[in-house]
Length: 386
Image (cartoon, rainbow, N blue to C red; front, side, top):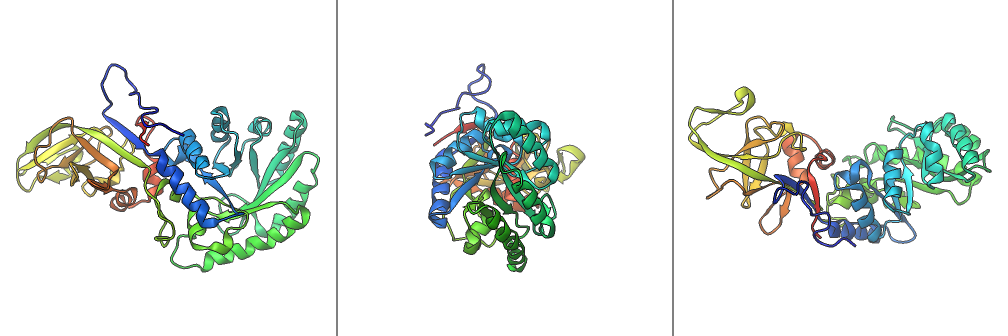
């Protein structure tokens, strides 16, 4: 359990507080996970996706909080992410869902981390690493059913399955999975087609190993396609408090991250004057403008220039001009008494005083909530608030 204030020491002891920080509500992560666990029900397991530094929330923090909420597995994208969790004391089952370099296989096998397989070279490398480590490698076959990214194509997956199972002394076929390309799309037909292709491979996998885990559902499929839950679901975004398109109302979740930066300067820009690089905004009238100490190096989408907003004293204030590396300017003409040291909420907020969600930020920048959350950079200090 995370106590309020844990990890709350500011990065520079010579200052009372930083100019920008991200407040992470660990309790929200735990509650969101518990609601997804309740939605899928027993005996379906939840693999909490904590890749990309826990979608920007902090990998170890997200891992601990989601496990507390009932997740039984963790999913990451690389060997480095998996080993970071092990080194941080996480002993839950972990699957690396992406490709792993052969040079990492020995460490992964020794650490008891499940590895994704979709080519013969990985099978042979895992076999050799397992022999060297003196323990069995845990492998999940990834089938490409239409995403056309990584994975063995469904029409040749059976041959690789048989090759993998020929190494029963060193490799255990722990799982078989696929990844949906359009589970959050309005139409359901392509997801159902992918699922049909996947089930053809699953039938063979179960013949070769009766206890193999079957999984294919991301957040959207977990919420929209109950028949695709199988043994395990792999939610990501919904655990962090946001639901994909066409998934509203299935489970109630709340955002876990609030990103805040300080106002550092307030001035009046006279009618006809411009603000920022390349002079992309010109004042139509005398305008009170506040400078906020966060920019694209902190994860503020540059595409929000002249379109996005921040919250100051509970009021939405439009971004003026181009977002700079370390700061941005906002219109505070409609907010009384703004001064240096005030807080500007960039993502999140307090429902009682106003919220600007990652989805709203994404809409103003022409992107997705995933990118907005993951873009919050490492120099933004994470502080646990609950």
